[in-house]
Image (cartoon, rainbow, N blue to C red; front, side, top):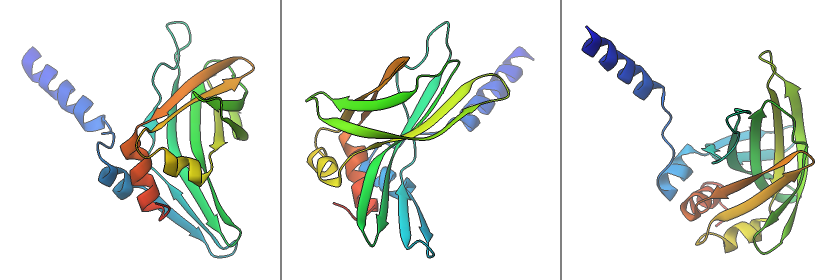
Length: 169
């Protein structure tokens, strides 16, 4: 009986797991496209990746990052869209890469959830030329807040796949 319950539990865990993209083709295929004909916008958003080393034993938290590009008649605005969930606010406001290139951060939403955790959604604006230059190295950006920081890394294949899907390569 224990063996059967263990097997059923394993199947439930496997069935609930979300597989991360492993190739540029996976990223391109998983990128969502939405349009707004009234605003003349097309928005490309990649499937999110989990950000490593978020939270601790005392503050269980997680973060998800994806790439997003908004194309309009005025051009393209690209960036890293981040969803952060924690037990305390971080108030993210700036970002730097390892070469000290600064990126602007725009807060989209802050909210308190019913379980008393807090969420912050924001975008780190990254020029498309910068993304193109990092198709072989990937992205490594540290996002700073007044109460904490997180490091977001996206592999090279992820950047390449997104640029292909958004017709920006």
